[in-house]
Length: 220
View (cartoon, rainbow, N blue to C red):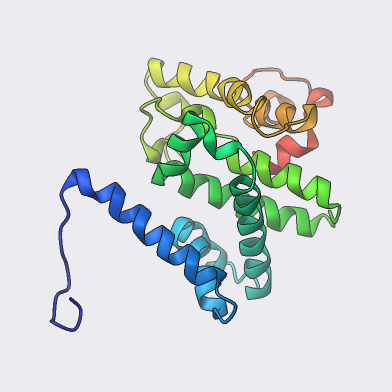
């Protein structure tokens, strides 16, 4: 189509998701090829974390660090593919939701960079951070909150209904995950607290800092 001079083409709404999944499958196969260039290997993160990567480039984050974060994300995705996680219907919906996946990969990239900066080298700790950051918003699936609410709309400007959904989604994420990813208490606590902040500035007013998980601060 490009060779014929086409710049745009349109898909019926019912065909769009199938097309996106097809492109993602092709991209995954390209990434797995032994001779794939670094640009190809980074393209998955670029596709789903485009806004974040633009910000990282703006702040002159080193390409090696971005590549490290990309490998971190792909290792977590590989882990989910090799487990029974994707057999869960709610997680299947989550992985097919482009907006939520974009947000989750962006958060996982930041978590990877923070883990590297903090010198966290334990594979177990890195896996906990990766899985927790990737699935922390799983409880939003089907909630009807638009993608822009995740990053752009202040909590107080959400409708009362959406505020309630947002308050409850960490607990819902934990409820879905606890039986499917061999999640331990540290991971589940971090997901449950990922919207809490020091000095009571999170979703729960006057939350005690002594009860705040360090992992929750990384993924939140």
